[in-house]
Image (tube, rainbow, N blue to C red; front, side, top):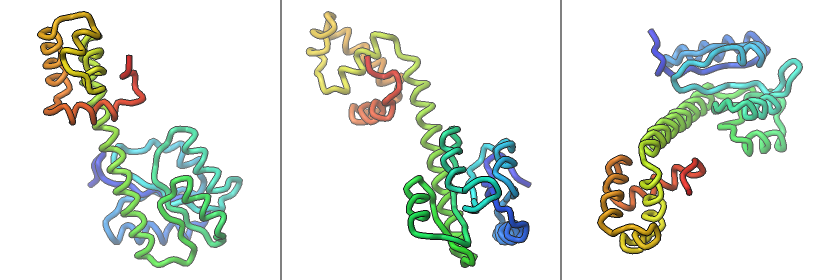
Length: 209
């Protein structure tokens, strides 16, 4: 039985024997997988919410795997890719890795090499998903700040003292302290250093004035 959080390995290869072999390997180590003969079939598939990665053949009918990698990026589909090919060359490998591929394996490859690459890719996707979730929570907290609290936050993380902020905003120091307290509470920041880190993560969202 699988849940939305179960990892899924997608396999795109026009060779049915390769697809079956890879899926058999993944099943032997308890990994869920889905395979496709064409990239278009993968694009039509709604991806589950759990971590995933893509094992992609470089040479496919009608499309080059590297071009498909770029197409996914252009569509905002972020999924770690492991390339497999029977016709590798150095420029091709370099291009794939520079574009963010996790690994580039030449057929025939060792089962363990593929499994190692898949585990690395799934770990990368888990981390990316966690970071996205954390950022969403941060933006939600930031959205609860009033306009004046946002102004105070900008000045606080820039290193200004309460007295300087009061002068900048034309208000009293006690009012700044109150706003600053609201900012720390709403952002759930336990220190100035933590608030500064939060502000950095919010860039380039509509954080600055």
